[in-house]
Image (cartoon, rainbow, N blue to C red; front, side, top):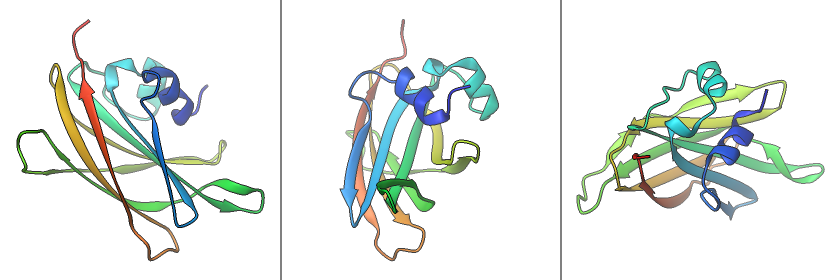
Length: 145
């Protein structure tokens, strides 16, 4: 079975994942319609597959003895807005840990509509750090076949 991060990378359109480096950490994030997830992966991680649901995936990698790349727990807080509205809505995030793969992901689900543009404001504070990194992701969703 594929780990969640690999499943998301395979499911997402090319170039859909974004990464930011800050304070010795790499933050990886992407947003996709949940309908693009492999059914077994969605079931295993209790993610509802639907053309009308989106999913934000955030992963944090920190320093390790081998260099950058150790999966790192973090506090991940997300707000989303749909332009032209400036009113943000909190996106609840939950941790998914896959011990046998040594990975940690933070996943949030939300409703989406055809051609909807969403702006995600993501705040990440790695465990053991007092530095919060804020990143923004703009993603347009297409729900029709």
